[in-house]
Each structure stands twice: as C-alpha cells, then as structure tokens.
Amino acid sequence: MLSVQNLSKSFGGVQATRDVSIDFPDGSLTAIIGPNGAGKTTFFNLISGAIRPDAGKVVFAGQDIVGRSSLEVVRLGMARAFQVAALFPSLTVKDAVTAAVTSHQRKSWTLLQRFPLEGTQHRTDEILELLGLSSKANTLSRNLSHGDQKLLDIGLALAMDPKVLLLDEPTAGMGPDERWRMIGKVQHLWEVKKMTVLFIEHDMDIVFKIAQAIHVLKYGAVLAQGTADEIRRNQDVIDAYLGTDHHLAHAAGQE
Ligand SMILES: Nc1ncnc2c1ncn2[C@@H]1O[C@H](COP(=O)(O)OP(=O)(O)OP(=O)(O)O)[C@@H](O)[C@H]1O
Image (cartoon, rainbow, N blue to C red):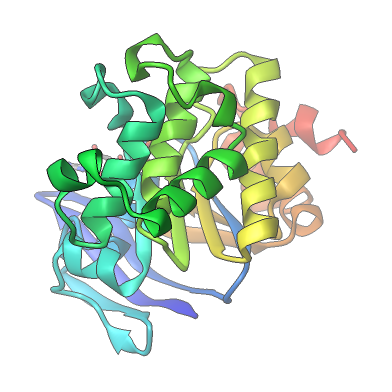
C-alpha cells in the first residue's frame, strides 16, 4: 500500500500541498482531480521524490520514502510516465522500450542492441502488446501520433516494472475519440497488471467512468474523497467546479 500522511509543501507564499493524507490500496485505480492550481502535479512530485515535502510522510513498500531520490523511488517500484518519447525521435518504438527495459535491468544498451537477451525482448514485446503498440514496433518515435507518443511514454514507465504507476493527465491534448482510446488502454493495463494506478485527469466523464476512488484537491488540501457517486453529489465539489470549464454538472448527469 502507498500511504501519504500529513503531506505539506509551500513555494514561497503559496501553499501547494496542505496536510494531505491519502491511502492508496494495492491494485486500486484512483483519480486525483481539482481545479487548475489545486496542487495535483505538486502532489505527484512529492510522492515520486521529485521534490521534498516540508512535512509529512510517504510510506511505500513498508518505509517512509521522503528524502529518497526519484531513482531510488523507481527502484522501489513506483514509476511515473513523463513526456520523454519525444526526446528519442530517431529510436523506433521497440528500441526505445528495449532501452528502458535494459536500463532498468542495469545492462548495457549498446551491447544489447547487438546481442539482445531473450528476457529483454520478451519484456519489450509484452509492453508493446499491452499498450497495443506492437504494430508500431518499427515506427520511429517522431512519426507517432500524439496519442501513441503518450502510450510510448507509459510504455517507458512500464519498463521499470512498477507496482505503482503515476499518470499526469494521460489524455491531455487529445480529441474525444483518442481520449477514450487512451483511457481504455490505461484501464486495460491496470486490469492485466493488477498494479496501483494514480492518474490526474481533467475530464470528468473519464474520471467518473473508470476511477474506483476519487480524491479532490483544492488550494492544496483534500476537499473531498470517495467513489464517483459520492463525488458527483458532493456539494463542496460542485461548488469548487462552478465557473470552471470542467462541466461537472454535465458529467454528473452521465451514465
Ligand atoms: N516550483 C514551483 N515554484 C513556485 N510555485 C509553484 C511551483 N510548483 C507549483 N507551484 C504553485 O503551486 C500551486 C499548485 O500547482 P500545481 O501545478 O501543483 O497545480 P495543479 O493542480 O497541477 O494545476 P493544473 O491543473 O493547472 O496543472 C500553484 O499555485 C502553482 O503556481
């Protein structure tokens, strides 16, 4: 279980995270939502070791990981999908994932490119299959669609063999069809890999449709937490979203 306890972080006068405590049970699929500037990305930065909290604990794999480097956190089993596929434009999808698998296994990428190990290939193929990228294995990263680049970003995180996966707005910048395709893939890999997935998402239709638990942040603090049904009827949440463009009222009428 990943457990965040009394986490706080300020940047100068801005308190981005205020005394946040949340438990993420093993194998859960959880959405972190909240208006712009609510502190969602800061929350991910804190739990993944990218920045250090002013106070509080992040208990993962039975230990408080505050103060551990991002790399150590990854080694413990928490990975985050970054927008990195674009950094390897001339690698094919398969080579990019192979490189990530290899680096996680601390083997030499250059050597393996010539003499790939069976285990590495198998793992790479499994990741591509899981994300529906097998048919694009030999496509150069730079020629992928925006959605497929984001899938490759997730693939590079999966190469770290995580128990917990953090996705910061996996559907950002996508049209409606592509969004549902992406979120279908996220749900599929969560079901197949049985890992703990935390995702930040602005699209309430998506959140209400797939998240088992939803935590709403506002001004850095937890405003509400619960199931889709509980959150869509929560007056504090409705108030927090009034006047924003997130169409909570519209999404609340769905399903
Ligand atoms: N490195 C930083 N230095 C100063 N202020 C920061 C820093 N990072 C975040 N903040 C501030 O902390 C607050 C929370 O920001 P954060 O990016 O975590 O919110 P968010 O919920 O992810 O927003 P969005 O939905 O717009 O992505 C904001 O007021 C932001 O300006």
